[in-house]
Image 1 (cartoon, rainbow, N blue to C red):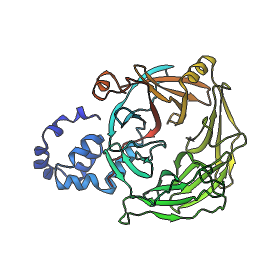
Image 2 (spheres, rainbow, N blue to C red):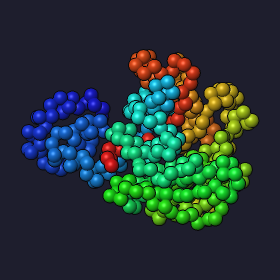
Image 3 (tube, one colour):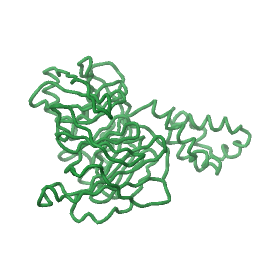
Image 4 (tube, rainbow, N blue to C red):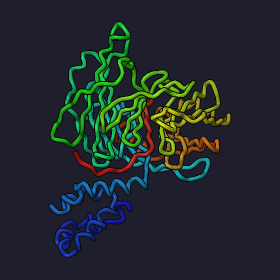
Length: 397
């Protein structure tokens, strides 16, 4: 249900206040749970009762459960001229046509700091970084929670990953601070440290944790959060697994011939499992995918290959596409890496099983009216990131 379908409530909050007492509480809860996020955020001002209902843990959980049946794409780009970051969302494409169109919605603008967003949302929440500053953003509520400084990095790189523990119903941010092995002078002196911050708790401070290996990694690439664990590439042949609940880090060997930190590799969620996807349309017309069948035994499925037709290969090569994940139709998505002036932005859907590629044009991103207000897309290119599986979440911290 869109906002246009609930005009009577949004026009007359006084009426809602005066008549809520005549409506059974269970019915009020049911009505509110069926509304979209935008009016719900406004309706917190109706009364103390409605505020407490909408902010309650049970109601937030019910809303999130329903939101997961309507996954969206999260699209974000940083506009260098205005020093702003724009966040959009659009429906995950279901049309079976070879080429079609979806409409994007502008959800939020971040202008305080030029935050980087390079990892997918977790239950609708996004982890942002700017130098040593780390924040968690909720595009649905437009809330930005800036986390306290960890420690002085002293020239070290700062990486941050967001995870969710479904058992404890907690969101945690993992921060890894280290030299990359070159800045330190020697590869064994990277001064790597790991810290964890738990959102929504009275103890607003970072906790240092220890890893189970004495062999530190020297880079971090990508992220997916599955069933209470955050996975990210840490080298050519290893993937780190951070258990959000226990706050322990373990390592998984990648499949043979897979490079975990290559520019043409990506960790994705495929049919609920961790998968490694590799592609390089400059060198080959094939995409490769391995699926982690058993994390404890570190057993991977045999490689799945998908041959991209020559017409698509040429287009995908020219667009310099980036694979960013998998949608609810079990298709991997590839997107243009940049938003070019006066050109359509497209998302490509690749079915690895049927070996088929299709395209959807995304309208509403930096259209003529939006460009006029913000001066977007007039000069050069703006870097674009697109993540599947984004959902609306009305949680506040």
